[in-house]
Length: 140
Length: 171
Image (cartoon, rainbow over all chains, first blue to last red; front, side, top):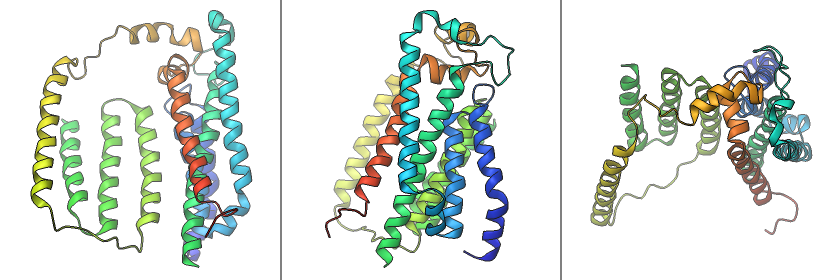
């Protein structure tokens, strides 16, 4: 891409990434959540991939790392879900009973949100990565 | 009022997306439908859905443009027009009959039955500690649903990576 696109990408990429993390972490307080935050995180990586080419994008987040993070999200989600399911009879012991609209007002919601963010973000990025690699391979 | 304007715009954009010859213009028209759907969610006071719809629509727009750019797919137009027209009309008729009986069973628009949701609203914060009841319902009361839908993305990503891999591919 051109120099303008590269410079703008370099300036905005961190803001987009941090906004995705913010949307994920405040999912239990306001509109947002793991799904939307994960997609925004994936969009920030796709931004790098589109502006700087697939070599730079692959250096930032390789395929192995993508698979590891995706599986980590799935395992964490499943572990939290199974733990919650076994403890379902005394649910109120696992909420922190802090004030409303504080970030630590809930114990399991942020964990679920972060796990979903990992799965969705890396999964969608992996799909885009495979597509980019596939089209690049076809051109050769 | 705004919702009807958005619905009319969405129908016009969807028809345009079907009828336009150029592929990229069609993709842009399709994403206009999705973005106005996000606005419609905002008008209906569902900001959670609006945010998700917005970002997913942007991702789909990027993916579709990336997939369709510089590619002219062949467009088959001739042959079997009678069968196509008759089958389309038959399916539209079946759909209309079905929806006539189905819509009679639904509650009035904007008047939800609060049998289950009232319970969620009462006990949502004390059981989960989440002030956003939508997240509490999606991740706690309907947690199995969320697990399923994230597993769909997970499996599709694994499948795409397995189909388009480099190692061990037979030419």
